[in-house]
Image (cartoon, rainbow, N blue to C red):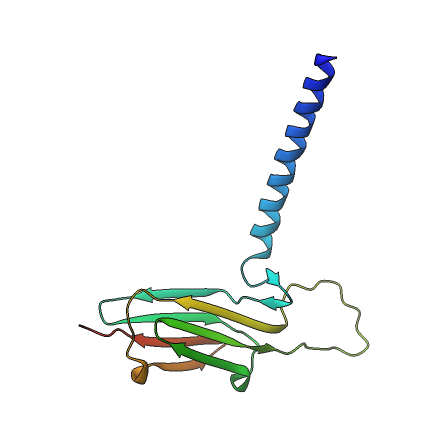
Length: 136
């Protein structure tokens, strides 16, 4: 009887290892822009800094400029908006990887910002936000 229990335990452990591997691969394939929560997707973002400012680069290809909203409150930066679906009439969908619908990202930055000096540009599908640091 003990041998059966041990065998089942090893089989369950192997199944668990396979599931972890499969989920890790699935997450790697999807990437950050496709992981959804409550129908809201999170666009991939790079953040850089130097002694004067933070620079945020957010990948928003296909999003219209007027569909992007940036809010700053203290050390929080919130970017939200909508990427509208592209519909091709009389075409059958074979693969869907591009996230559509509402998106949102909230970032907490470690230093206070000079809110009045924040600037943003949108070019070639990238939203760039320059966040000057406040010096004390």
